[in-house]
Length: 191
Image 1 (tube, rainbow, N blue to C red):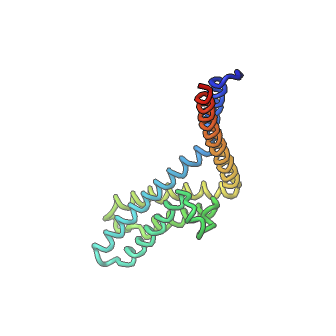
Image 2: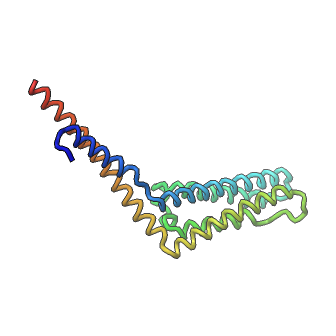
Image 3: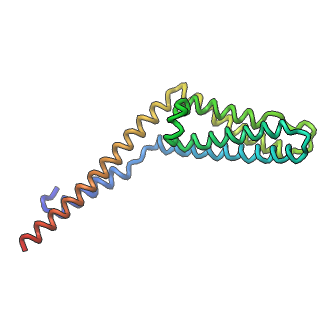
């Protein structure tokens, strides 16, 4: 390592780049799975909205339409929970844990699958409901198993470590900037 100003700045920039380039593959997989789960919940929302519209349009099956509206509301809650927004965790601590989220997802999947059209008139809607519900059911089961295996604890520990690393990189960059400013002042005073 050189002692001149440019070499130190260059070395500290390299260190900053190395720290920044390290992303935890486990956290990337968790984020991807969270996005997949949110998209699946959105598919459930779409299927339930279509079923509710058809139920209200017929007028004969108002209770199914109301049930679908509740399914939509809870599925929206699943999507919001996948954003890991702190406000949600403040009031619903159970959703911070994988098993809690998984059970909510399974509940929405069951609501989406409930009351299928037995007359055979709406085959396209029943197929969409089946696909959406089984996908969300699979995500929910994975979340419950993850909760049993304490994967959520590991995820939170790694997120905390990543936040600490990001703060260290930010502090290092601020120190580099301050050092450059001080070197400039020193050079200007000598001149």
